[in-house]
Image (tube, rainbow, N blue to C red):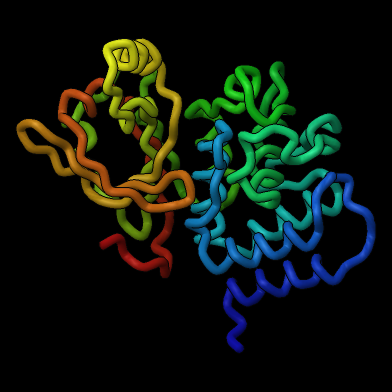
Length: 276
């Protein structure tokens, strides 16, 4: 057996599984550790389910890929102590969140316990006024919103990136021209800020009006997985979100309407496989 980072991470998780003690979370030790093993093996599987945790999900995905030892150490300390750190950044979720009963609503059904713990703790600890302590509903959607500055701060705290450049705008769209200049590479992660309505296909007039209104505010992060190919009428690109890779083709006008820019996280060249 090799002694690479993934193997070291698996050993850390195995120690948590075999350990005793009482976690402050209302979570199952075996479910959490089984899931952490899965995420070390394939970080792209981390998912938020029906919860508004796309920012923390994007952070955890790239962190698990680049430094699985640090990422699972964060998860283990959270489980054992109810608090942890990402580099120099303290992650101290509220007692209310830590003592929340997981899965008390239907919305987190597709968000496994380990995923929820890692993401919800980070989101709650980063909030100053509206704490994240609910699983679903209007309050959850508002408390879980991740602004560019927060995601940039988390990425910087991992120590994996030499710079994080904010090319987003919360009011003005950035346009197809900006997106086509973005090229994913092993030493660069690209986090697109979009309105989720980009991926909706409303069929009713009411649905179309709703998308136009809601899409005035960017509300979702995706990780770009390919160059953005723009034709006269359509835009095609690959992205990661919701625990999987997706390829989408949308009208160019739709892309322009719902694209709000990108966080560009640059690092020293890693051994990750190049984006194909």
